[in-house]
Image (tube, rainbow over all chains, first blue to last red; front, top):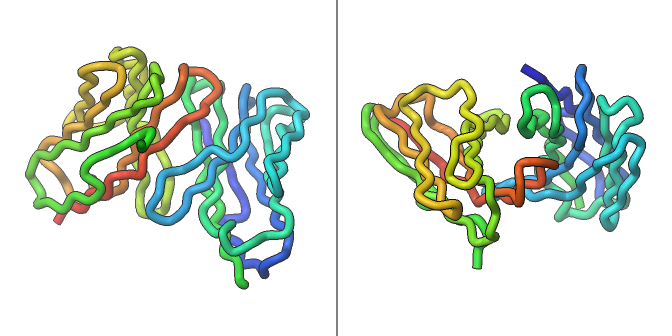
Length: 111
Length: 113
């Protein structure tokens, strides 16, 4: 089936640093989404992107839907300790007709 | 009020037993899902129901049976539990089937001994 390649797998950064993570696929999607999962909780939607080339911000988070519809990135500016968690990209509208998740990027922030 | 609630949050049981996980959403959504998250945190869809009708049934052993008594509830029953069933199971709901904007429950951690 379809797979999303998400990188990096994990990141250890200092508070205040900017973070960038991305997701690529061999096939196209109609929607790209980014979720965050805190320890012991379910994933929570951060940003949804619906058009190729779309750039959307949510506070310190910025995400883009790649022009080819096969990739997306998420940037977090000026990281803070509560940014810690696992970030998942997800693609919707591919050949499998359901939401496909990447394997996640685990973010650790050192105060 | 919790939008998507699952019970129990933790479940420890012996191999061979049968167990159920319940899910309720109070968002008025039409579609509900079950996802399985393994020890490597990989999220994989198991089932999707739209207005009580099964839409997606991924390659899941038939020991797993979802039941949707109404569109606000989607329960997961597992027969003859195996060690490999140990995982966190997430229920989720969405307004409709498109766009992928899901609301997840807190998860139910199943441990099979």
